[in-house]
Image (cartoon, rainbow, N blue to C red; front, side, top):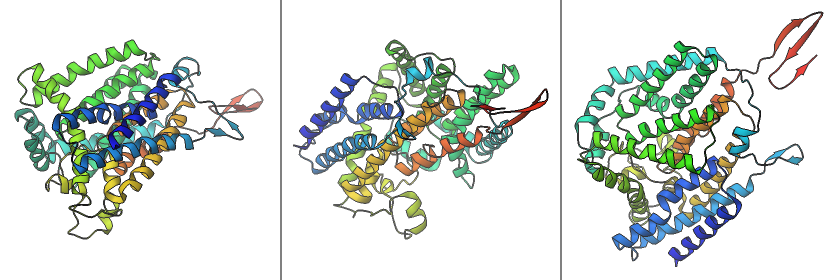
Length: 436
């Protein structure tokens, strides 16, 4: 029965999208990723593995149904209100075609300071704390074996005191800084700054491979391409989307040929298909397999910030329990897995409502203005959207920047008023208005 309910819910949602039209937004991008990773593929996986009789497969489909309902409830709860009048939703096409582009001012001193600090952290991690050796390990070892991948990630990557700074810099902040720097350099039309901006972007991409993350490397260049399209006001339609996908597939195949033991493009495609359509479903079903039959519900202790400060020494986080004790392994489970471990179905519903509300608010925040800072923020936030398909909610909000990057963008924007002496009177200018 659970499988039929899940299929009916998805069918109604998809039909609603077809009728209303698909708006290009963070909310819709995330739901599209959900359909890709956990939609029809769920039925394909369970049919092929003959897992319909397993209780944890039924629990998983109940979790996914709770997510879909809660996610859209969160969207309906959000109201775009300015004063007493509801503001019309601004979609992507209006943003690029009709909304006038403003000349945003950036706090260049703060930007350059953060760029230098980020570059120093990345270079230190690469050359003094194991990054370069891990990069050579990635390129010289076959990684198709899942157990070997877990063991390499346990033993390799940037380590030491700089590791948390390295991860946080490269996962969220570095992407936003790179895109803002590229936008500023292109606006100034300075060849030296353009070269420096793309050099920082290349350094950032190398840092992902050095930390044993092929997917972050690929996603970063997809984000960079997306930002360039936004910057030059290139509309993304269905034809361009197909071109975009056709460019991503050869890139994925190339990375898998270099970084795995795939001997040809067909084998690489099989590995990519397994990574997208099989692995997330398999991993998701491990959580109800362990909780609550083997281990009890965590009641909030599985939230990383909570168990880092308040749990006992013998507490084992959920992702460690289901991976067999590999604490630093990359385990690709949607955020609802951790929500279920903490608070069962209630946690899945509440976190799904929060995510739906948050993404609706971020869309409203992004589309209010048209400038390269907003476009850089939009591009940088895509990694946070992608991470919620593969990691916990707190990790996405803080580490990958769904909350922290909008705050950083706010402080990067220069809101100081300038006084210019014109004739006998002072004229005070701001970015939105002037007062004489």
